[in-house]
Length: 319
Image (cartoon, rainbow, N blue to C red; front, top):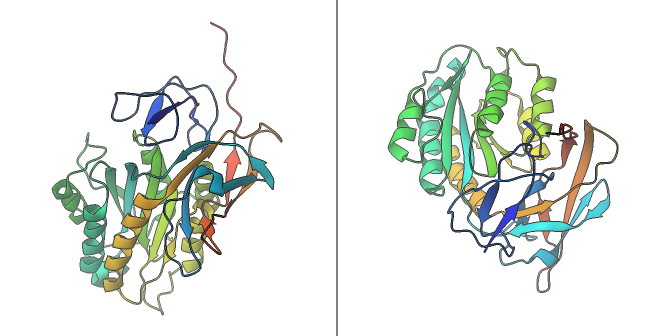
């Protein structure tokens, strides 16, 4: 079954504004659609959460129902209006650090990114951004996304390790590019040392955009222990805000199993949506907590974004 969800889409916000409409296959609801992807119409704000559920051993838990979840926004329970646990296609960007310090690690990093592509849903919309002093799209001009592993492999290989690191700019450009995708679920996979010494955007500007985005960010920190530009705190912060994970392999070869794990994680998450109240005005930071409890399971934990920035919808003029 599918659900036509009426909503508006505001750029870099969890809300959606405009005269577009979409359906997500697999969402619980009662409006059948013949379209395999997104048909769109909107007039209500909707917060969509990517939720990963683990048991006390850290294993993913499947088979849960809508009633097993409780969503809190600023400590107030919310009515869940959208629920799904399907392998839904996503729009995902792979951001690869191509600064000079990555030169000795590049072969393993590219193999890891290729592994992620091979393990992902073949209906995903994927793009690649290579970044050093500047951010460069891997795909050719006029090709915003691809699902073809050959094209994406070429996109990964198109960079060259040199120069400094414009990580803030890469994340801003990645979040911007995600908004062009048709898939409602969105994610970034960032492979970097976490340092930044070349961006036009400040860290605060970048983090503000992260808070307004609906994307889940996964970070993989690849650096030497003595690397002065490493910034594991930022990589953890990006993942923590958005409900993703931050990984720090012992060496570059460890990125390969991590990318495989991230691909599986994206494909196995629950999608939970609710309509927030328009309290406290625009620009307020709202805290999110998801509680999960199910018969036959003990000590379940739900991992999702910790907050988002609420923006009021623009007023509609009368025709």
